[in-house]
Length: 134
Image (cartoon, rainbow, N blue to C red):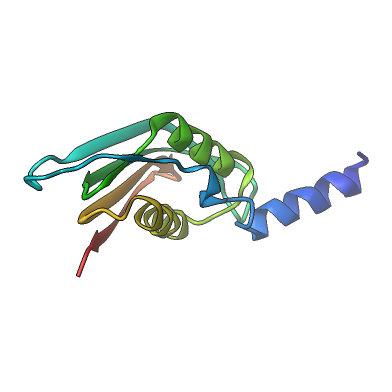
């Protein structure tokens, strides 16, 4: 691939989150009869790309949820997160996308997604998105 081809590829990944699919997420049956068991998952090695520069962003994604009938299988979640490594996406958008995908697949009673990214230009960003079943 020549220099122009590389630049076109970088532009494509910086402008498009279509690389991210919820199809890899696998629900596992879990009957939370008393509705009192919360699950917390932390990914301290999350990476995505800055959509403006194409440079990598590093952060920690924390998922807290009150399951109803399903939990997420962890290997499938790891594979899901790997899709972000070559995708340019703003923090706020990726946080909402993760929430949308997970709530669709495992249908929790409540869910909180928190993303905390390493400083860039001396500024740390933390984004929180929430869901509560009606």
